[in-house]
Image (cartoon, rainbow, N blue to C red):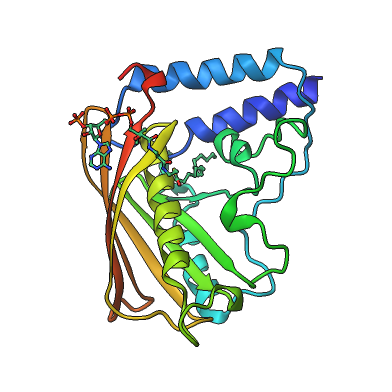
Length: 249
Ligand SMILES: CCCCCCCC/C=C\CCCCCCCC(=O)SCCNC(=O)CCNC(=O)[C@H](O)C(C)(C)COP(=O)(O)OP(=O)(O)OC[C@H]1O[C@@H](n2cnc3c(N)ncnc32)[C@H](O)[C@@H]1OP(=O)(O)O
């Protein structure tokens, strides 16, 4: 029991320790939601499991480019010591699980009872590297989110290139994660995508997401998919998220 409580606490801590952006929606509602979630977890007869695979860590399928970029951002995640003072991190890696509730709780596995077969869309293929291989980092200072995405062979659309729906899925995933850092319980209301240049299957690309503005319950984010050196623009998009009415907006 003590261990379980400790895990829940750590899960919530990891949510709270995610980059808290300068612009935030409903800060009190967000804290309230987190508190309510924890209370619910504690009172319901859920089964907990310590086994929560974090899919955003390197695996054998990652190519050299993916690894290099991962190292680049990951090295900026560590806390730096300057003199006596501990400096805050510039970037933070966002852990990724195959159930939505694990996302929201930072890895705490709540239940095998509720929709036990449900799996997060981008994390439901067992073979590493076969489909969506990605890792996300968020930047507190720049209010940005960057995703390194390696497109596996199961994502084919036109021969040799990535399916437009798979690209849309990744854009939705990256921007929704970015918006989730601002507030929980959001839904994609609008996703507007321009496909400029096809993405070769098996290649690694960067997906950059920037906060445009927040307006009441609305969060507007823009997103670009480019080659890893930034020279080729593959896709650009804007996304609108609406905070659930549960938060009293
Ligand atoms: C360590 C821990 C890590 C934590 C980090 C977290 C990581 C998180 C990662 C993973 C989590 C997993 C999450 C994955 C999910 C992926 C995202 C999806 O695929 S979502 C599914 C697809 N979307 C739907 O199914 C929505 C269906 N639509 C609706 O439910 C409603 O229409 C909704 C909620 C979007 C809005 O409904 P209303 O009744 O609440 O609000 P109204 O009054 O209609 O709109 C509010 C404002 O928004 C504008 N609006 C609404 N829809 C719009 C639209 N399509 N275009 C433009 N404006 C729109 C309206 O005009 C209004 O604006 P005015 O306040 O008047 O200025």
